[in-house]
Amino acid sequence: MNLSYRMEEGERLGALLWEFGPGWRMISSAMLGGGIGARSWVLNAQVTAGYSRMDPVEHLLSLGPAGEGVGMMTAASVDRCTTGSDGGVEAVATVGLRVPTWAAAPEGHVDAELAPMRVGTINIMVTVPVAMTDAALVNVVMTATEAKTQALVEAGYPCTGTASDAVCVAVPSSGPEEIFGGPPLAVRRPRRPRRPRGGTAGRAFVAAS
Image (cartoon, rainbow, N blue to C red; front, side, top):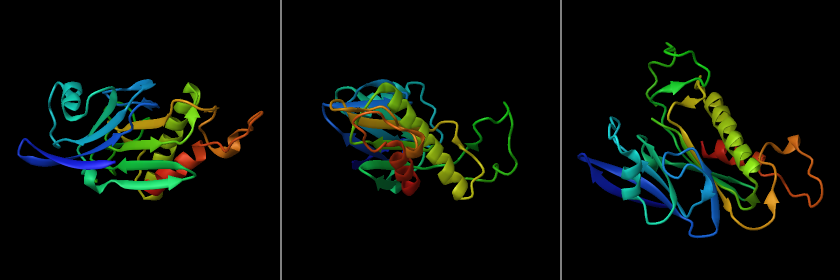
């Protein structure tokens, strides 16, 4: 993970870049490089709080290296990222809660308890050291999201995140594939048992938060 800075709209903005190279598969909800596929880098770029560009994908492409990658944005200070690790799983989070919300809040609803809170976007980068099936990758995203909510509640924030949160999970593209990415007690694997990675991913993210 490398931290760099650039001047944009009169502000000094940071960016975190992971250059994995070939041999990695990722799942992400990001605007750039979202979905599941082979990716070689991940960028988490800080933007201005009043970001209003209509070409965010092109903007991210201009900030990242060549090749297929994942690009996330946040108004939070990326140089204040937090990290956590557990069982070989590593998580990095940049955390901002400018517009905190409940996932199932009614449309147009503004919670009076949340309105005064000014603590932008929560972006999560998780690296898992084993290959995973598509279903297991989806499961790890679920686990990371659940862990994010757990961390927020334990910290006293009545919300599940913000409307612009993004997540990325990177795994090796070769090797025996893990078929589960949820909490360890919820699975009993047939044959060649290995330690499920979902619980470690969750604990790593809570530690990062």
